[in-house]
Length: 391
Image (cartoon, rainbow, N blue to C red; front, side, top):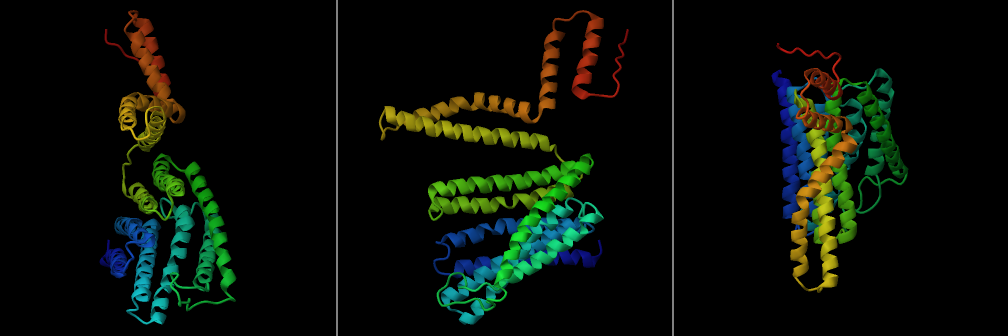
């Protein structure tokens, strides 16, 4: 790679790091900021921003012809601008270290989140994994999404109201005439569906390697989506304003890093690890965790009703019960996962197991060779099977 192309990705990563450092420093310097939910959520947001910036920079360094690297690096830079702008604006307005009007203007670049989110939902799925559109017919759709993102960011930036909910402040770009343009962002969200449809079309037409890449990327997105849904359910139970709710929300933001990490692994790795094994373990251990947690809570509540609400016997007995259920539950859940999601591999394993049992009782050589050819055909499905035996 030429020196110029090396310098650009490195400068993007360094700029993103500097902006994130400014946002963290401003958050720490603001009195009471770390004791609030928004302060910790802003710091937790550093992890996915770093993932976008670093993964994008690495892809741009090693695969400069792939637009995906530059796209991820740009998204990371935009999110870093949001972190720095939001943190610095709150610091300036809360501490009054700068004139109020300047603090209000510092908050304006934070609207870059609209561009970053729009690129994640439209351009990223449109161009995964090689950086090109699925076909020239999608060019008009790509240009339309970029135009809608540009209009929507203007609409979001001119919304009237206070800055970061600080009393006495007002958006310096507020415009009642342009306010309705914010509704265009709903069209951007609708374009997410079209971009995902393009990704499905690409997957159906892709070869084995590209399909494995796309499955790794989908796995990263699934990890984030599952964590986010679980976080929503937990915060509705424990309360979003509670300490536990803050921790859960922060964890869901950290999980956002799984998406760029999955993209980076799929693009940069020449030989990809079998995604089926990863998905199988994720499904089995996720179901195992949920099962054991439900068994533990249910047994604790039941035993407390029988024994005593204040007795430690219920907790101890429930712990022993969960420990005893671990191995059989894991084996059973893994079997169900293999049977439901990996039926071909499951049937192959069952076929080999059955063949091993018959092998111990078979003495006829012709029958054994015919059985062996059948098992090989069923499990490996080759085009032709021949068996050569030494006399």
